[in-house]
Amino acid sequence: MQETDSRPPNDLPHGESPMERVTRVLTMQPFSMLVGAKVGHVERGRAELIVGNRPDLTQNNGYIHGGVIGYLADNASGCAASTMLPEGAASLVTSEYKLNLVRPAIGRRAIARGEVVKAGRRQCVVETRVWCETEAGEEKLVAIALATLAYIYPEDRG
Image (cartoon, rainbow, N blue to C red):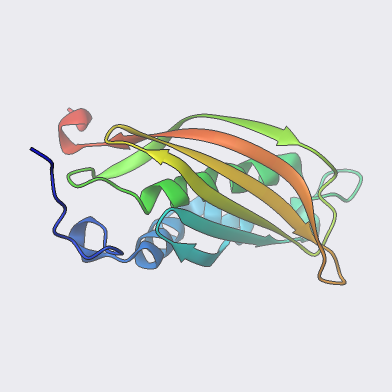
């Protein structure tokens, strides 16, 4: 027998839209507020996060720090995975991610775009690309990540 999901196609458990869930979760994270992360475009299976470049987020050469790029890759992956939250799941956590930094993060802001590759009942695999936007508005790829996120169910918290 095939399971059916009676929710509207864009609603998550508790009736949240993907944008509502991502915005709520992001604003509950003190570190996200510290780096000034903003939610961009969100839809089922995809999420975009943005961090503006500022002096306190750079390394000694003036590039956006690799830790900020890693944060963006991890959190955009988590946000994309959260838009696919299975019925009964309460939340999720990153179980692993690999990050390839492909060029220095130079620009006025960094933009991470996560896209679900495969979502299951227990875990979700997401590919995220991080771009830096130049002063001229051109986007340059600075990092690529592949992440696995584990869904958490109430019975897992025991």
